[in-house]
Every structure is written in structure tokens, then in C-alpha cells.
Length: 317
Image 1 (tube, rainbow, N blue to C red):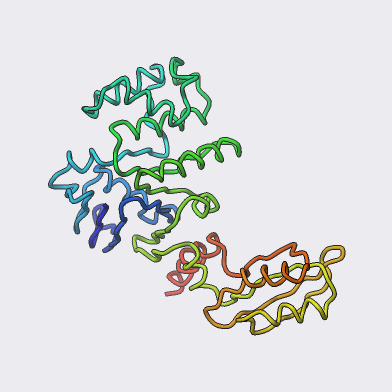
Image 2: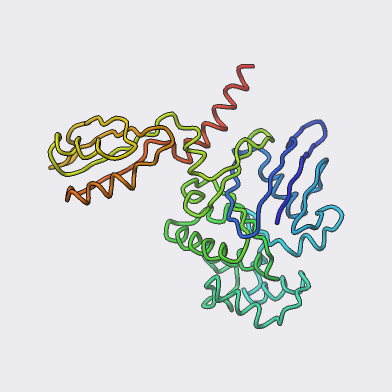
């Protein structure tokens, strides 16, 4: 769907993006991460056609963004961090304006009605945009990106400035949209990326430093693959149960952290996921399982390892 090959972007003598390549397949929901100044926004603006590239090639559904910009742009819906809203228009007036601007061929009224219902802004469709809450303005911003039914949605910080309830609502909307669209989601809320995205691309200092699933990134960068188990029972019995699980290398009791229960660190053999078997074995023995969590790195820790630690190393040179 999206092919980025040896992408380079210079601003004068400053190299903002340096030989970045990746592919995003149709139907994927991809998190696009990077610290401020990493080149992430530059790449997104090149994908949408807002910026030219210095070197390399970018195609969207086979169309080159430089040589066939109109065809490429028709396949992309873009929500910038600050939605491009005309606040003196009503919601419907604005969406009809975007429809005409994009030269959409679908039946206008029916197409806009479908989008309004999808993003749940029917109750405010006749209100001036300037009177809407931040959450509704974000929904209108997503609605304008959906006009023309593009194959690809690029969403830059779609939940910035929202309250927790609004964040959950927008996150649920993105998950629904991911069933019918290829989505690139940029956010500084890493829990949001982990909840919605099946794959993560991380950019740092203009370079691609990671491209994988959150689970595999955590697994590959973590030195500690053990799990923490909290279960109800006696030490000897629980140790015996946990030690009997296939793939378990070592069991260490950490003592009581909660009434009537014990915590254990359970270390697996190499490349062995023991969590399902541990849960099944404890249930089989009628020992209540209260906690089962991995000691592998979180996405936030992975991000810091790949960006912050890299910056420290760069500074030492």
C-alpha cells in the first residue's frame, strides 16, 4: 500500500531524514513514533504530499507522490495535530466544503451522512465548529480525513488535549476505522499505540531504528524474560506446581505481597512463552491466580532505549 524507499530530506545543510525505507501493507494499523525533531513529522508530510523529498521514492497504492501527486493524494486522508477546521462554518457546511475541495464523486449527501454517523457527530452537525468541545473538533477533523473514503488514514496526535473519556472514545473510533483502512497513527501516548497498533515504526535522528510488533520489540530488547506470578496457596505447593510447567527453568518465591497469597519470579527457557501453561496449571489445581505479568520491557521502555539511550551514546562521541 505504502512503499518508502531510501527516503532523504534536507533543509539546506541539515539532513532531517536519512535513507529511510519501510513498507506498510493494506489493512495494517501502524504506530509511527519518534522524539521531537526526529524527522517523524517530516516523513508524514512527505507521505501526504505537503513536503517534497530530496532523494528516494515514496508510492501510495503504486502512485509516486512526486510524479503522480493527485492520484496519490486521493488515497490519503490526513488529520494534522491541529485539525484544519473553519470554525465559522457549521459541521455540515465544512464537510460539504471538503467534499467539493477533494472533488469527490460519491453521492454527496449520502456520503457525508455515512461519515457523520460513523464518527458520531450527528447531534452537532448543524452547530458552528467554534462552539464545539475539543473532543468533537477532533471527531470533525477525522471526518474531513474520511471524505472521499481514502484507503490510507494518517492521524497525527489525534487525542492530544483530550480528557480520558474522550481519549477512549477516539481510540475506539480508530480501532473501528482500522477494519476498513490502512492507518498510520502518530502519538506521544505510548499506551495508546500499544492498545491500537499491531506494528510500530520508530524514527530517531532521521534514521529508522525499529520496525516490528510491540511484542517482538519488547522481547528482542529485554534481557529479563521472566514472569511474575501471584497465586493463593502454600509456598511448597505453589513452587511444585510452577516448577512442573513445561518450559520453566527456575522458580523463586518473593514472599507475601497480598493477604493469603505469594509472589513468584518464574524464569522460562529460551524462546519459551510459559504464561498460558502457568494459568492453565494453576486453574487445574484450583489455585486462584491473582497476577500474571511479564518483566519484559514496556513499549515506553523500548522507546526510551532506542531513542534516549542512543542520544546519550551519540553525545559521548
